[in-house]
Length: 322
Image (cartoon, rainbow, N blue to C red; front, top):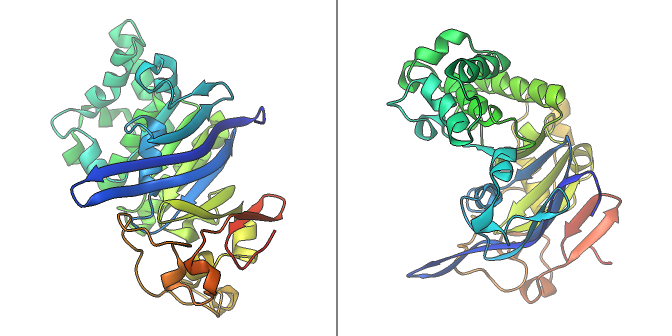
């Protein structure tokens, strides 16, 4: 455990029991997040990436594993006794602000509610000052306090959702697909807002998305998830210069580009095929083998272990040996 690690996740599992069987949404993942960095988690729908966010934020309790916050507090072991400070320290921004903001409440009430819950700001004027502060922080005028969510656009709603996360002065913010429901031009505004706020307050982000290209200029490090497991972790620049796992190469080959130079950088030996298997019937061996053009016989029998290719770049694939 390093002193600058805000979060250390060890062998995290989250299973759901349903009539058809057991959904292994998150199936034994480990990673760490450093103070002040943006750690990206990328994967297709069904990979388990959003479930990770819900477990880390306390919406779900992990089935197994340890989640150590700031080197000393095990979130999972203390799930029912999470302190008020921990609840303030870790905030989440959801994918769809249209459903995460109460349409019957004015934005002032939406932002004031967390302050009241945590007894922050004894006087009404103190709370209003804090609301004005966070609205200005995300680029919204004070006039937005008196509007309802249905009166503003999707990008503005998401900025309100970000303001709600910021109002408790957190250390770690979980961003669950925060731009996927927005137009491209609006996405840029939201991303720029998040970057500026992070620099100003030295915040730590876990940014969850299906869009690998978005991570290139946003994330410090990236983890690729597939069928409940992490298959590769590396620095952002390393991912695009030297992608190793066949699934990572498949994702990069699918990224939309706007120039011939960018097209030349995409892997040519692999294309996107098939769909992610059901997390109810996880195949034996490597979960990716049914879609992998590089498959070898051992892939069908044994789940691969992580191999460190170079410092900070690890991959879980039988093509790479210890």
